[in-house]
Image 1 (tube, rainbow, N blue to C red):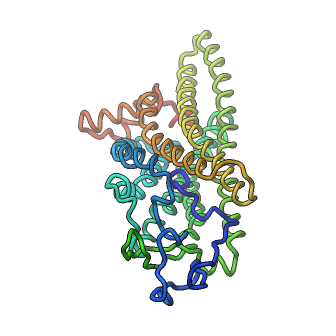
Image 2: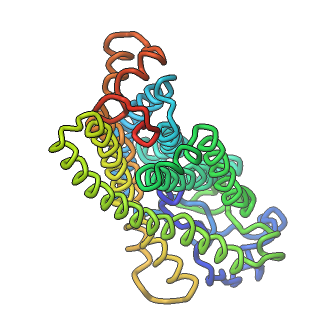
Image 3: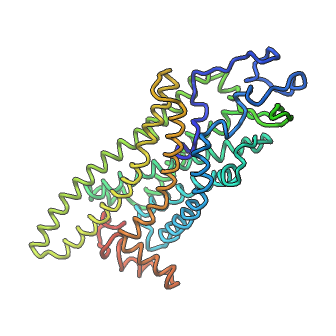
Length: 408
């Protein structure tokens, strides 16, 4: 996940490593076992050696991911698990709730997969150790980079689906009755996960890992080197492959969705203000039933605006930083210092993780049905029936109504 990666792996599209090693061979390609007995390099002479200390700003990574991350992980697991349990109740299974449920699961898995490596590398202070064997290097690559990117991409697109769905509810209520149904939401979420997986699928195979012996601090050690796979280098070429991958991420994962969400948020806020004026008018006319329905819809819209806003606060900086990073490497522009960009990405990554438990606070603070269901499940120890739940409260403050657009 780009929200978790501390290094834009292979984003440097223009750099080629020199082949001036002591054997006259290019050690960015080939099998080291063919000539490792003739010459054993020093660790600093192998730019493609997997070395966490060299890849990330350790002075910031240690306090963030080593000391603070275990507590944040504990809080996130509890908060998102509670969200999943509450939203999975039968009486809570509405189209919008399904999207919120999928978002909670995606965010949780985005953090769970790299968490063991954060704990091992930073909390246990093993960041200076070279990863070995190659299976561990491949697992590190997948669990830190590829799998989190898959779930985070899905989470971004699910947030966009949430905003689009709410916009249809508010501005086109008659269309919502046919478009925003539970089966169609399941179908849309299925396609989101499918395309997110397709987008990330090549990242499982675009690198190869080989073992190598090297000299370090007066002794012989073994580690892994990471190289671009032959099918990328020889068939597609690295420039085309990585340019295509990151341009797609910029357009359809970062900048594009963020711009769309800003637009939908503005439209929803405008619709909310108009609805509030209408509610005031209905209240003056003493049309209490319609006034309550509109109040429920407004509360739902306001809560989702807050959810999307929290998302944008952390994702827009990541979108901008990713764009600058790609432009600097792909176009050979000197926009910012490379180390400064990596440090910025590191802090944004942490802020994204920090935002995961926030949704639980939003639901508890702005959703009466969420609070009621939470209280029934965890404080009173009983499970509300579907009939009981449907007759009580909508996810936001106020009783359920008969219209789809106010049911969250």
